[in-house]
Amino acid sequence: MKTYNIHFIRHGECEESLRGVYVGTKDVEVSSEGLRELKTLDDKYIYPGTPVVFTSPLKRCLQTCEVLYPAITPIVINELRECSFGEWEGRTAESLADNEDFKKWLAGDTTVKPPKGESGAEFTKRVCNMFASIVDGLIKTGTTTCVIVTHGGVIMTLLAVYGLPQAKPFDWAVESGCGYSMRVIPSLWMRDKVGEVYSRLPYEKSSDDDS
Image (cartoon, rainbow, N blue to C red; front, side, top):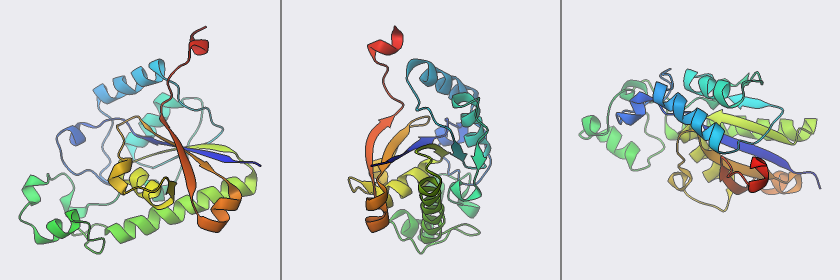
């Protein structure tokens, strides 16, 4: 039976994230140190080969594609961008601690929307609709492997919804430049809309890879 392997990779580290500020759709770049870390990971470990790379349109994802998959022109999908934090962009949790909407949002209320931003429910619907269309497209075209370079929030949300074993979003948190591999079996996807998460990324090199 044909199976489909989807590899999720989080973009490289940004200075804003290290400062602990919320960065959603703000178009920041991978830091110089983040780029060095990506290159080190690429040298030390193995990222999966693929005929196609899908990516968020934000610079930090496009830069990550350039480092890890320089020979492939990525397909940019706007719906793979991070959640919009609106007026909370660039602020820390500490600076928002007295904001009642922020408290509800932090507690997991998916109906709360940051000012000029996106609610958790809206974000989840956006990324899930896009992911379902990606999977359906892979099955329709018979493309058995793809890489999705995107954001931590996108990866956590998608794996919490579609991933097996079942886990909460923050259980799927992943470091910059790292990610997960998911195996989709068409019959199971059509019936239950789930896929097996079977490995962390990048992969360890075996002794054969060094020979």
